[in-house]
Every structure is written in C-alpha cells, then in structure tokens.
Image 1 (cartoon, rainbow, N blue to C red):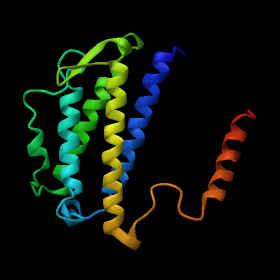
Image 2 (cartoon, rainbow, N blue to C red):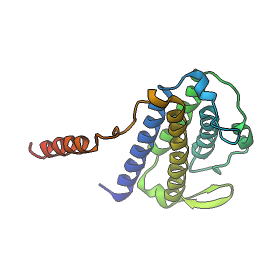
Image 3 (cartoon, rainbow, N blue to C red):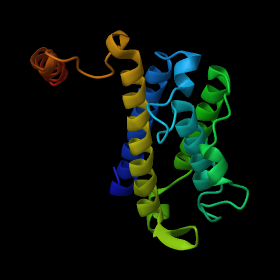
Image 4 (tube, rainbow, N blue to C red):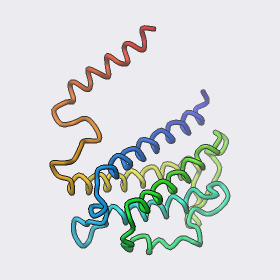
Length: 182
C-alpha cells in the first residue's frame, strides 16, 4: 500500500477512535451534566462540543479549496452556553464528525503535499490534518475528564480498567497470536 494512503487510513482510524471515546462518554452523562462546569473558568461538555462542531465545519467543509476559517464562523459564540438538549448537542457532534470523515474520504495520496490555508496561513494537507488531530484529541480528552469527574464512582472506564492491565495485555497477545496461526 502506498505510504500516503496508509497515512490517510491511519488518521481516519484515529479520528474514528476519538469520536468513539466521545460517543461512549456522551452515553454516560445526563442532560444536566452536559452543561455542568467544574468552575467558572472552565467550559461545559456542551460548550466544548459547540466549539468542536464550529471548528470541524469550518476546517473540513471545502477542505482543499477554501480557507479553513470560514467567514460564516463565529468562534466566540461557540463558547457561549446555549442550554441545548442532549439530543441537539449530539446532533452537532455527529454533524461535525461527518464533515471531517467526508473530507478524509475524498483525499488521495497526491493531496497530502498540496497547500491549504487556515486563517491565511499555508499548511500542507498533511500538516493541516495533524493540526486538527491534535486539536480534537485535546478537546475530547477534556470531555472525557469532565464527564469522569462528574460521574465519580458511576463512571464506566473507556479503556483498560485500573488493575486489569496484565489480563488485558495477555488477552491481546493471545488474540493476535491466534490470527497468525491460520
């Protein structure tokens, strides 16, 4: 497989994993918790999702042909609490991610070295994707952390539960060694 296609498939998988973390987090919180803040200086999960939605739509709509900061985007408004329902916020979440995945599905290896702009600054497509991968990881991590803090003892781990690393590693090793024995 071409290294460029390998990269495109890899980042798509990483974005899918990130979305899955957010999906499983949203399944664990109440509508009230969606809007709770750890303190006055922090954002709620709803605000973070509003921001991600605005960023995703702006960056990945017409990804190869227009500046990633669309004139229609009002970034400052993304940080104003709107008290939307969990369903409405989930719709923003889904719409944003669909825009990302749609743009990634259209890429070919030849696109990776082309130039795109974000706020007038030139980036290779490769770098622009890495920039967003980093940005979205940061915010999905915030969402998970806030939800975990709010849920407390009721939180269900999204990864390997504490104290189960050894068993998980053994299970994975067995799973992958059995695939090799076909």
